[in-house]
View 1 (cartoon, one colour):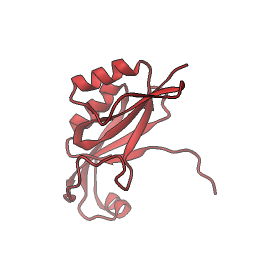
View 2 (cartoon, one colour):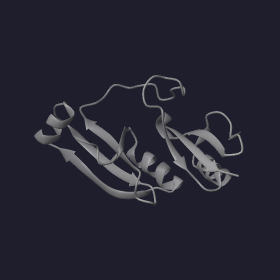
View 3 (tube, helix red, strand yellow):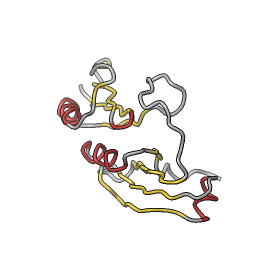
View 4 (cartoon, one colour):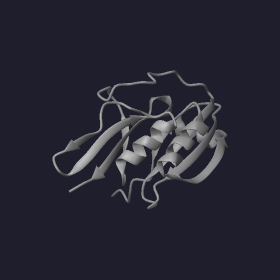
Length: 145
């Protein structure tokens, strides 16, 4: 038995439109949107009475996908909307970008904020973490040199 590929990363959000807009603003493209409910999804996710909307966004090369999901029912527990980078669990999604300064400026214009600072790693990369809607952390890297 072998894994064929990584299909997507799922992120549960409260404001689906804001999350989609954030990732589209970063350059991802909406692949599909929809709603799910019924016994089959209840059994898959181990909850009862699921009603959810979702959007799948993908990188321009078509290889990286995020599934953004808004659960209408059942309601989930809150959570730390601004976890630090060292909080246990999945903390960020990373993207390689061109012109990191322009990408950061564009995200700041739409409410994104740097978690720390934009830094260089040796002479290879410029890197930063940006916090988007609902505390989502995105790592951006630009190859240099």
